[in-house]
Image (cartoon, rainbow, N blue to C red):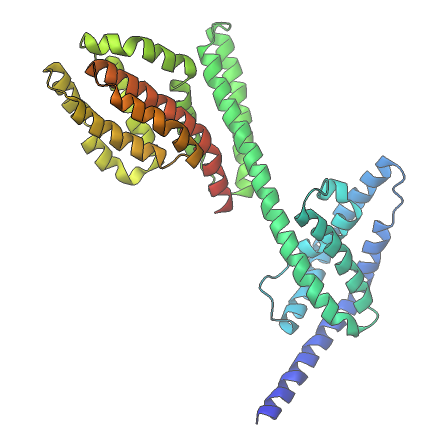
Length: 370
């Protein structure tokens, strides 16, 4: 019974292989034309551009794509033991990679690019071999799997690189808007004109990114930039100079502003703990304590420990090592509670600025690979 089953399976496999080879041979002219275009002389740069244009146009032809997809469909009916499947466009891309490497892949500066180039050449050779003799099918199977893996990794990495570039460009434009608004070099009409042009470029970038990742969320980066703008180096210095005097005179406007900025940043980091943050960082509670002169070191230390622990979770180990000792030193300075509060609040603002710089790139990378 088992032998009969094996025999039937072999017959089926042989039948599917014949169908695949037959379809391959039927489209022999496509591969001959691809090889002919690839052999265009490229002694001059304009010839290389011509080769790229001609080859790109040829492999973009719907009829060519459909015929190659039919070949692949028959192949995958025969060869089912594969974790990834290639589509027609990615297979045709192997001719562009092989013939116009500098344009498609760029500098061969890593293992992925190197292997992609090697296996694109092997796939082209294997197809030509199969057109002559089906005995090359095993080699073709192995190399097609390898090519599929490397082209998939390359394309995903290329998407990440492009999306990272566009996002940083978008963020630079948003930062430029803040700088224009703050600048005294321009009058109101000039500011409106410049900002309108910046917004047009932002919309263009947002449109491009949708082709790469439809749900790419720029709102997060907008919030980060807003925080960054408010916590500029000059602003932190200004807080440091005036916060202590204002708290001592029971003027809590800056105290409220800073606490609100800290709360907003914590919520950006984790929206799920908004209620917890609102409950623990109750601004009115602390203002009442300060007004009535009943705020002691233990109460504010508990508050600052909570904030520090929530913040540092989102920073790197390096940042924790750098800031932990400084924070502990500040906690020991318990001579003047108003000075204690103002010094630690300014420290927390500086910490937020450092964390913001770290998590921005980390969040971007996380979004890209998700």
